[in-house]
Amino acid sequence: MSTYREIVGKKIKKVSADPSAGVDGEMWYNSTTGTLRGPALIAAWSSAATLPGNRTYLGGAGTQTAALAFGGALNPPGTAQSGTFEYDGSGWSSGGDLPAASDLSGGMGTLTAALKTFGRSGGPVTAEAFEYDGSTWTAGGDGGTARWGVGSAGTQTAGLAFGGFTTPPHTWYANAEEYNGSSWSEVGDLSTARSQVGFLGDGQTSALCVGGETPPSFAAINTVEGWNGSAWVSETNYPGVSQGGVGTGSESDGYFFTPSPNSTNSFSYDGSAWTAGASLATGRQNGARAGTTTAALAFGGNDGSAGNFTEEYNNSTTAYTAAAWASGGNYPINSGDFSGAGTTTASIAFGGRVYPGPNAVTGVSATYDGASWTAGPSLTTARMLAASAKNGTTTAALCTGGSEPSLSDKCEEFNGSSWTEGPNYPTTAQFGDQGVGIQTAALISGGYGGGPGSAYLDATSTYNGSSWTALSAPSNLQDSRFSATATGTSTAALMMAGTGGAGKVESWNGSAWSEQAEAITARTAGGSSGTSTDTLYFGGEGPTGVTEGWDGTAWSTRPTMGTARFSLASCGTSTLALATGGFTSSNSTEEFTGETTSLNIKDFATS
Image (cartoon, rainbow, N blue to C red; front, side):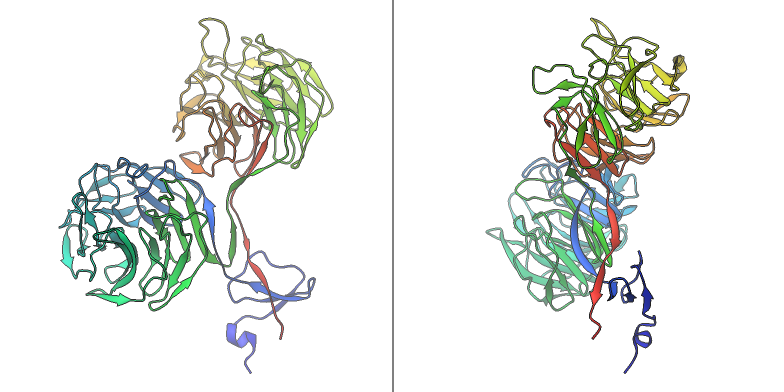
């Protein structure tokens, strides 16, 4: 009998604790648990950052960590769209728009070399093709037969499109065409004319056409045809009808999903048989896909209306826990227009006004330990819309300015047991300004001076723990703003949106503010956490629960909050954030945790 080492090429080691990494087939004996263990494959879908807009009938290309979504319709039978979005494995950001709005088009290739095929442009169907280079779409060669609802497979220089129909009047097609990077040529037709076909495949030598809808009743079918490079041949029928499904992989090693709006089914295909796979969270059709059979992405689609949902599929020894917002402990009172500092497991919030009515200004403060809030000593002066040093701690916090309801220039410091007054703010009494840093190294900017005709402010001041310094004009914000939100330190900060600032974003380098790329969604009175180059931005007036991330260069989406809210208290990092209270949210708290991974370890029998 062969030994494990002879078969696998690895020894079974004795360890006291499981390793943090491993590969499929590796095993070890855990002496602490007394078990034989090793990593095991796990196949599962998990929710991911939402598309910036609801889309169905959209096209897609790329991989799970570098995907492209383009065109589509807002709400069937809504207007075709031209927007393009790019996915980096964490969130979606805007890309270059299509030259013409289009929906129900095909897509193939990569994020930096994609092909958009056929589709409907503002009503009439088209044979147009466009190529994407990672930033811009340019015209490619037009196909022979204008149609939409096609299947697609392949690359930007070796593509295959098949099926489709025109509307109105409706004519269904069995046509298949190949693209060589500049022009299309007719190849063998499908045996059944159909549209909104399900599809997967590597391209011109391997593709699968799954189900679709056929004339004259638009009925969904389950027949499957495979392309072998020269002809279409009958394949094993799909286990259920499919209309607008998508897939990844090849004709002999494929993974197929989103077959209808009411189905969460997925199936793998080995060239002869279908095997049920992991269920999606949201059933849908006419979405788009990217990736491989072991690392796929499903995005957009119609579950009764156009959606912005995105899900990731992984089949590996790594267990993925998707980024998400979760409920935390309730704040002691219903409060909005208040301030916070700290981390998700050690934070402090203070001031604000009680919500709903009579909207009395409050000096209440409380601390959070990651599970529950504990009421603490009140501010010496009740106030709302005050600024805080957001990186402060539960034993060293700062509160300055605000409305009492008259405007205030008072500054208070917290030492872990009581609030005491510090030196007054050096410029105009104001409220709605924003602060970052810590109690002994703080930066405060913006705000509102109040009174008829008063303007939003652009002034910036620093605090060293004992005195304030009002900086001179070159250090002012580029855009005056009120009720913005900020992250970072006194030497590297980020200021986002706010009334007067529209959707504009500015960064601080220790001496001057400079404009950066605008957030995807403009809003005011939102919350934020993190650093100047690794930021989470969430909530805002609307109200909204939209969440975005900033990497120092660009904005991309993150999972939406469970409760839309604005004028909230916030703190933390880009992967561990806290959102508390705010208007429309009562006294609820939410905690954000970024995506985490771990080795999927399984016990094995020893006999």
